[in-house]
Image (cartoon, rainbow, N blue to C red):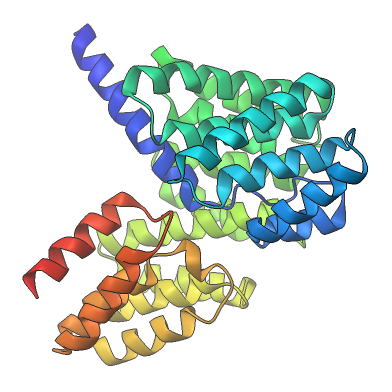
Length: 338
């Protein structure tokens, strides 16, 4: 029995970094608008240069120190030396600024990236360190939405033996239920999703009013993708999936996710030409790099018999950095058949 529990726990750990890597882990981290804008846009090379310039002028700049860690860690998660440098910078940030929340937050982010290349039992240990860093972040800055939401997700997705607890996630929601109702609603959305209460999740999601809060917008986008994909792949309810993707497209028209989702619906309906057209449109929108657009476009092109263009799409996708290994493996298999 113990072995089975351990296997389930380790399987969850192997999935954790893949799940978190799909989301925007950078939104609304910094109080400095210039640093936050680069971070939110995933412009990590520019963020690194700016952080280094700021630190050269003012070595005690805590936000610049944290920004440098984030940039080093996030530009290419497959570059071991950069990831290690980012981890060292996060430690230096905490050592120099132990009471600054953003240093704790980038420590959690750095550990999360490192988990992708760690062994299973090392990952379990690192998960505890991530939890500690997020808890400390909230102690220092209780209103930081990202830290609260990420900690709630950790409690929800981790097995009990590794610190998971729905009750603790509910406590985090209750703490901001009245003071920050939309942040609380996001946590309830994740609680409903973990319990597979899809109707409840949809009700909460459609009621969400994220305004211009980038953290809440990112979380809403991820939730729409999760719920709509459930209806698309598991429930086989294409009308429901289409409705949700259309709602996401209306709410966040500059983002690729809604258009990408609608392209997938057309592909499932056998409408390959329209699917390809919408995948092409999705590639021009914000956030396209976070989605496996070329992978799914390759599938649609293959379905319409265009093997040459399908091959090119698969090759573009496989060549990208920081992509979900599951998608890469699927694309490799499809490419091999060509």
